Image (cartoon, rainbow, N blue to C red; front, side, top):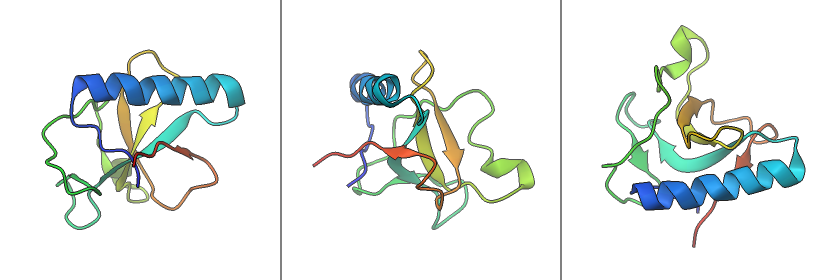
Length: 102
């Protein structure tokens, strides 16, 4: 299951994983986490069912593609030091990696 990030401590761990994977791979910058607003635009939920009480969106995000293709899935930006998130299209698995939890 994709990772749910419900605290700043978890965000630090998830970002460290994304940054490490980015450094090792170099081709993937961003990594899906388990948040989406697919059911209701603007209402973000975790795939795990956990409460969505913590977020770390980059300034101006989520923006649903600014009127372009709908962006309903969250990514953590592995190529930044800020641990920020962005909303992206859900159907581009070849472009982004995945941060999972069990």
